[in-house]
Length: 217
Ligand SMILES: Cc1cc2nc3c(=O)[nH]c(=O)nc-3n(C[C@H](O)[C@H](O)[C@H](O)COP(=O)(O)OP(=O)(O)OC[C@H]3O[C@@H](n4cnc5c(N)ncnc54)[C@H](O)[C@@H]3O)c2cc1C
Image (cartoon, rainbow, N blue to C red; front, side, top):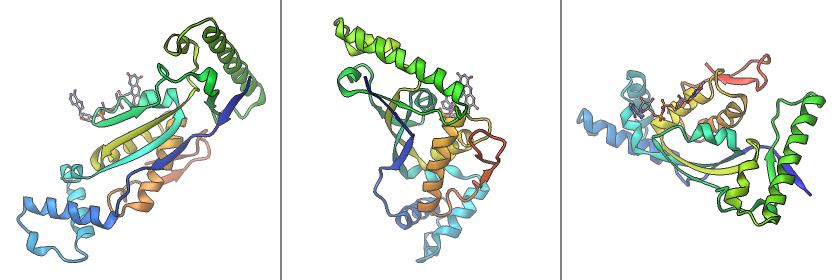
């Protein structure tokens, strides 16, 4: 029986032009001050930086971004606690992992061989139990009772930009679970690369004493 052990991954699904996002947000935000006459070809960045600094964050709720996250079920259980968003997640009720094969996410912190072996043994026994239950006629939604937290899952997440900022603030913090930080920091880096200004206040910082050595202040 083959178990695939994979690494987590994140992708930005939305197709967007970041300059257009900034221009839209400026157009919406300037309604508050009736200062639309001040819009120029390059006024959006400064305007948005100013309103974010002042805490007038509701303006950035008008634009949303959708991402795809491949991680374990433990991490998605935390992600879906964020209520100002929309989710579509691979279902353990409908997917039959006996026919498609069981995939799990490697917990990067088990670098010690003994710990890794214990984890792998537990995963194998879950997979054996799952397959036996299916062979005995259990449905996937019944057999899932024995699937581990490390099971690979895929989730589509849509948040508006304000909720993304809030998500990164909580989930890139050194207090967040290391596997959550692993995916949140990687997403934040992609957001910072693609969208100017909005995420500039988040500085990704290295701390080698952490099992996942990056966090935001
Ligand atoms: C380090 C860490 C440890 C955690 N530990 C635990 C734990 O041990 N057990 C546990 O159960 N959870 C835990 N959580 C989850 C946490 O309690 C929240 O459920 C999760 O972070 C989502 O945050 P939120 O509810 O603030 O945000 P969202 O649901 O994203 O909402 C955003 C904001 O909208 C507002 N809002 C949303 N819904 C309401 C509402 N109904 N009423 C009023 N205001 C609302 C709030 O201001 C909220 O901050 C932990 C989270 C972190 C980051």
